[in-house]
Length: 358
Ligand SMILES: *Cc1c(COP(=O)(O)O)cnc(C)c1O
Image (cartoon, helix red, strand yellow):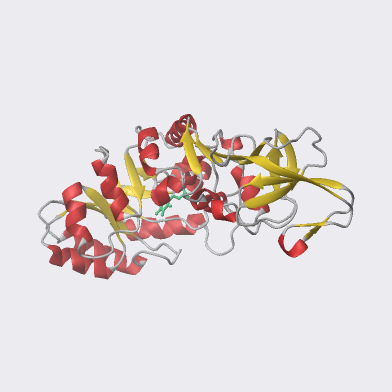
């Protein structure tokens, strides 16, 4: 008998969420972001579900090559660029586009003597201070790139820090757009700025290409709920109750005896722990569904199990279905309770979790 923990990937939800992204930015082309094994949903599965995307964008060079080998013929983009000279002939041979974010990459490109043309995305650091050329260095980088014989096209690209958070005091979206417009002024080429947060909150900033990730999987970067935007959960993580304990007032549960019963209680043991990707820091009170009834975590998350309060669910039994997140319990809500974000939960689903698709 297999362990009852299963991640179900909803292909129709992936397709639907892509259509939501496309309809919010109808004049732009869409990179469906499939980095990190399609945010834990499976790369080849996502490739099939995102057949209507104009391109697939990711981070990992080997995964980009696998997409080509699996038959993806539309554009592929490496969002973080290439990492070493040896990546360049691979990209050229497979028609894989890449970001260029630093001088060292331009030097590598100049030396590479590529046999096929490459399409590159010149990254501007518009204030996030992660990757990219400063606004002052941008035009010079563009000119240097233009002189590399193998470079066929240059897309102008930047990334937003706070598109989901209009009140952020650190760096506003409008300031990033202003810096981008200034740095890109006079340069031709397609423009690529918007992640999910911008697609959802600022569709006016779609420009030529949008780069939605989390929204395709039915999560949001923050702010309003996925349901509000008409997005559907693409993953349901579900398991079963595998044990039940009836405990007296004063008894404790699990490692560290962190949970102590204030009255007689029924505790359900669920086959899912942090080695499966459930967040170990999820505190008591984190929501969970048992046979469709909402209840809460009680006691510390262990490696292979969690414990939940079944006191108010008298019909719960060994074999009762438990939803950790998904169709009936938004992943963002669980993430929020655990002090993290839906992205991290999706990406952390462990290899030992059985995955099925429907
Ligand atoms: C991951 C990523 C995205 C997608 O971000 P979401 O918040 O998941 O929509 C877009 N652009 C770049 C450069 C990224 O690295």
